[in-house]
Structure formats: structure tokens, C-alpha cells
Image 1: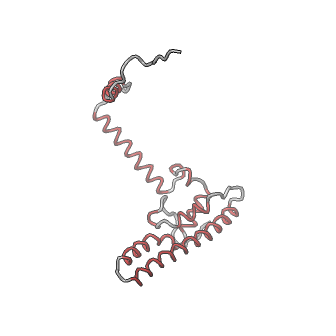
Image 2 (image 1 turned 135 degrees about the horizontal axis):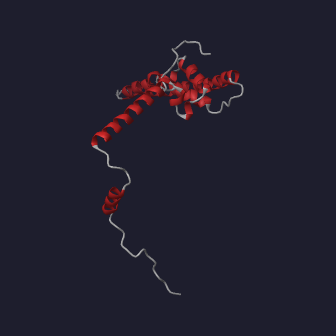
Image 3 (image 1 turned 120 degrees about the vertical axis):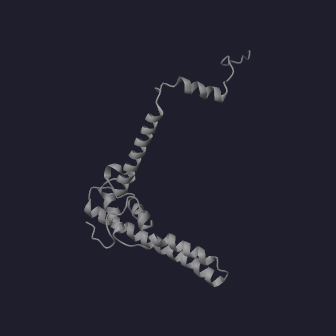
Length: 176
């Protein structure tokens, strides 16, 4: 049995030569700088307008995880109430500052506060998820409630002004 090396019969081109060949042989028509600038501006305007529509909560601009009347109901329900989870990040900042103080009692108290708030946020999220699933099942009997509890809890742990899409209801509003 003979061993023959079967190659392509030519050396591999250098990367810069291959990339230069691709640039020259591209099928895109020659475009002027003004046309490129105009196209870039149009794309930027499209991105800005679609982002604004997403933040407003327009159904067509929402990603799949936020679409549907059930998700809209859950968002409105969560946004109409206060939860300890939305204050978790500012509390963590306070805890960080307090742990810099070189008094062990203050440091221990700060860390205990952090864990207490975390525990309360988890328990609140558990009960919020169960409540949301019951409400969605009552309002939309034929819909699937899978994932709605986690969706509600994660939204409740975000600071209100950083939620996307932006809240459509004020705190204390009745959600129907």
C-alpha cells in the first residue's frame, strides 16, 4: 500500500491576500460615501424608533419572551405593586458602604441586612408567582402559565425605572 499525499496542489494564500481578493470580487455595487452615510443614518433611526416602541410596550416591537396578553397582564400586575426586590440593588450599595466601616458589629449587621432582604425578596417572589399564576389562569383559562411566575419575580426584582418595557401602570392602580 502506497501513501500518497493528496493536496490541493497550491499553497494556502496569506490571510491579507484572501481578504483583499474578497473585497475586490464582492458583488456589492459601488456606493458613494453619502449613500453609505444616509444608509447608516436610516438604520440608526430604525433602531431608535424600534427601541422606543419596545420601551412603550408595543406588541410588534416586543421580543418573544414579552409578547402576549398574559405577559402584558403580568407586567401590569407587577408594576402596580411595590416589592422589596426592587430595592435590593440600592440596599446592596448601602451594605457595601457599611462593610467599609471597620467596626465588626456594623459589618455583621450590614451583611445580615443583605441576607434578610434577599430572603424576603425570594419569599415575596414565591408568593407573587403563585398569585400571578392563579390570576392568569382565572383571566385567561386556556393559556399556558408556564414561566409566568419566574417572569413576574424577575420583573419585580428590577428597579422600577430600569424596567423594560416601561411600566404602563402606576403603583396602586387596579389591574384588570
